[in-house]
Image 1 (cartoon, one colour):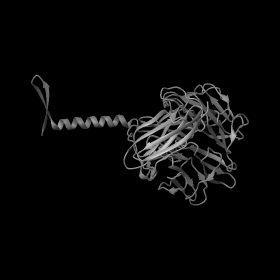
Image 2 (tube, one colour; image 1 turned 180 degrees about the horizontal axis):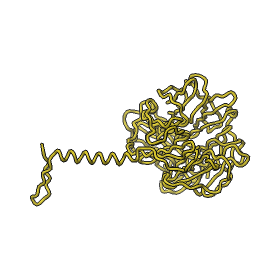
Image 3 (cartoon, helix red, strand yellow; image 1 turned 30 degrees about the horizontal axis):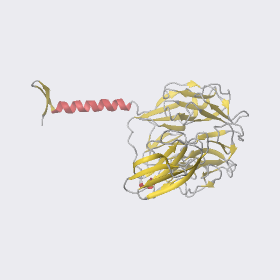
Image 4 (cartoon, rainbow, N blue to C red; image 1 turned 90 degrees about the vertical axis):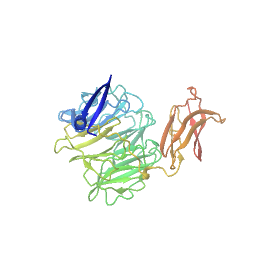
Length: 462
C-alpha cells in the first residue's frame, strides 16, 4: 500500500502518499517528546541561597509545600501554594532558631508542626492556618532539640518527635511523654510508621561516643523497642534515613556506612536485612508512594534512581548543577509524579516525571502468603478507627467486611466486592448504614473472603 485514501464525503477523496503520512507521524511524536522533555529535567524553584533540611507536601493539596532550613542571613521556614513556583516566608516563628523539620497533619487541613534544633526556647511549634501563625507545643518534651516529627497516618493526634530520644503525643502536641526506653543514649535520625498498622514503627539512631548506628523496631506504639539489625555486616558507622514501602510495609530500605557504603533492604519487617547492589554514599532516601519499587537517593554527587526496588540504579541528575549536595528528597503523590530535592545553600529543585505513571506490579516477595485480619487501631477509639487485613491466593475472592453490635445485628458494611491478593485498610467512622452515630459499646467486625472467616472485637467510647 503506497497511499492512504481519505474520503471527505459528497464523493470527494484525498489521496495522501504513505511516505508523507509516516513523516507527519514522526513529526508529531518528536514534538510530543520535546514537550515532555521540558518537564523531565531538574529545575530550580527556590527559596534562594537556602540550605534545605526538610520538605513536606500537604497530602490533601499536593501543590502546597513547606520547606525549612538555614540561610546565610539566618534560619527560615517557607511555604508555596503553587507547587514550588513561588515561595513566601511563614509567619511569626522566632528569629534566630534552627528549624530542622516540618510535618503536615494528613487529616486537618492547614495544621502543621515544625521542630527546632538546639535552643533554650520551645522545641516544637504548631500552626492551624498553613503557617501564618504559630504557638509553642512542647509541653513535657524533655529533649534539647528535635530532629524529625512523624504523624500517625490514621490518628493524626498521635505524633512522634525524635532527637536525643523519642517522645510521643496523643493529643495533637498539647503534651508529650517519653517513649524512648532503651534508646535514650542515641541521637534518633528518623522514624517511620507502618501506614496500615501504625502501632508498628522503626527508628534509626546514632550514638556519638563511640560513634555507631542502630536500627530499632516497636510493635506497641513506642512503648518498647527491639534491636533490628540482623543481616547488616560490620560495625555501623553511619545511617541514612529509613524509608518504608507504603503498599507493602514489611519492605524497608536504609543506606549503611560500615567499611563501605551499602544499601540494605528488608522484606520481612526488619527481621533480617540483605544487601542490594547499590554502593554509593547516600545522605537521604525517598520512595515514590504510587510506584513504591521506585527509589531515589541523594548525596554529595547528585541524585540516583532505581525502578526495581533498589537492585539497579541510574544517574538522575539531569539539569542539576555540578557538585550539588542533596540533603533531603520528597516525592509528591501527584500525577505526573513530582520530586523535590532540598540542597546545601541552593534551595529547592523540582523534577516532574511525565514519562512515569504505570503502577508497579508487586513482586511475589511483597505479597501476603496467608490471609489475616488485624486488630483495629486505635482501640478503644472515639471517632475513627482503621481495620487492616490481607488476602492471599491466585484468584480474587469476593470479600465482605461488616460491623455488628453486641446483639449480632449488622451495623454497617465496610467492604463488599471482589479483591485480589494484597494488603488493605478501611476506616470506620462510628456510623451506621444510615449515617447516624452509634453509641458507646462493644462492636465486632467480621471478614469473609473465600474460605477465610475471622471476627475481632473493638470498643467505641464516646
